[in-house]
Image 1 (spheres, rainbow, N blue to C red):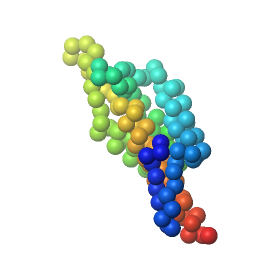
Image 2: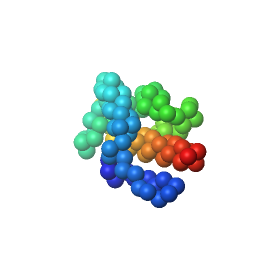
Image 3: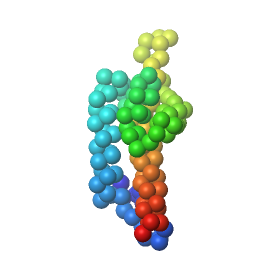
Length: 124
């Protein structure tokens, strides 16, 4: 996670690799996906896909810091990344790469934290 850094208003960099809130958010995402194991399938290229029918619910559960519009934004962003797995002839199963979903959610959370830091810095 050390690749994620933001800059505060006074140009001091902040390393999120030691931010307990970011670590807690990552563990929260992991636990949400762990509960969804029954709705996942492994793609032939080696990554895990979450059933597209569960996308809205998972986005709602992960993005606790966002309002409904922010949660729907993540879900719609992920719908553009749907991948198909052929299970039977003429039957495809569609899902979203959970690693990509975690990446987008983490980026959104970091942006949320950055905005909070800026608001706090303006008050002090």
